[in-house]
Length: 224
Image (cartoon, rainbow, N blue to C red):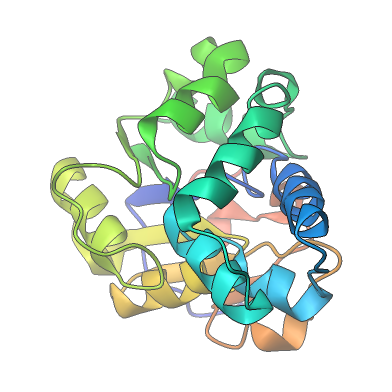
C-alpha cells in the first residue's frame, strides 16, 4: 500500500475536474483563433489549461503572434461561452466523492482560476451541490496575488480552512494546477483529460482516469 500522508482537508480545481468545461474552452478558444486566421495545436491547448482567463489568453496571443489585445480576444470568447456555461455537467465521480466526504465531515474547498462572473455562470445549475464546500477561492479574489502555477491560491484556501498545507490533498486536471499544489507543499492527485500525456504529470502523487477511481482509505479518509 502506498505511504501517503494523512489527509484532513480536500481541495478541488473546478474546470475539467468537477465540471466538464474544458472542451468548451478548447472549442471556443479555437473559434476565436480561427477568426484571426490561426490554429491552436494540441500542445498549446494543454499549456493554457488551468490558468486564469487573462493569463491563458495572454499566452495564446503570444504563441499565435496575434495582433489583438487580451480584452478584444476575451470579448469575442465571452460572447460565445457565456451562452454555454449554464448547461455544463459534472464530471464522472465528482458529485459522489464530494457528497461522501461531506457526509463524513471532511472539510472541502475549491481553488479555481475562474473569476466570480464565470464561476457563477458555470455553477448556477448546481447550487445545492456547491453548498457542500466550506471555502471557494476564485481567480479574482482580492487577496490572491498570483495565479496557477504559483502556489498562492492553494495557500490561501488552506489559510481560510485553518489547515496545514501538508495535510491537504488537491485534485487537479491541469499541469499548471499540479505544479501549484506541489509548490504549496500539498499532496496532489492528477486527473488529466483523456487527450493529455500522462507522462507529463510526474509531480503528482497519483494519476487517476476519473474521480470515480479514487480510494480514500489510502489517504486515511473514510472508505466508500
